[in-house]
Image (cartoon, rainbow, N blue to C red; front, top):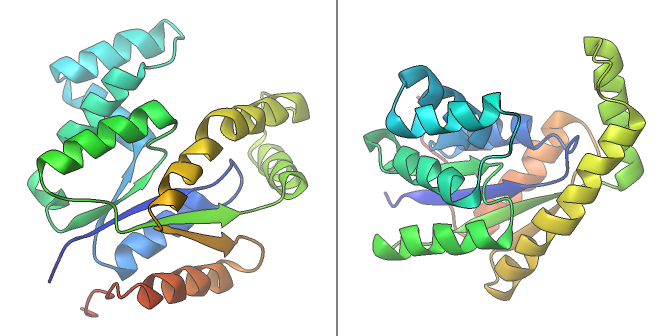
Length: 199
């Protein structure tokens, strides 16, 4: 069976974390969230992890180069050999180029990019609800709007890059969790991707 390599892209509040884990399980691939990779690298105390830790503790953003190095390291591990689903990476066009370089070196490419399409007001109301439920006072409407603006400015343009390659599936992100999962699976199967055999 050939490895399946996927990306899931969507604004904060689009449900991409939840859907990413479900889709990775359905297609039998590793779900790789950038946040989890950073935390694992820091916990393992690797040289890359030490660099990430120092940057995060200083309250700075991890650079594209270092982010890409940490993700490359994770994708080089044996459990990623059967394929992967990336959530939160690439975040911008520079990181797309880093990922291309890494995959080209292995004679691989991205099979499909799942774009979860959720209107801005819906993202804001979901995030506001989540903040209220979790008692997060830092998630004000202003902070949420700023995060969405960063997504629109930096991350949304990567979809144009992948659209020119014909690998983007735009999925309506409104509905129940199961409805959205079913839409994603149908789109991926229409591309000829095969679900993992049920265990």
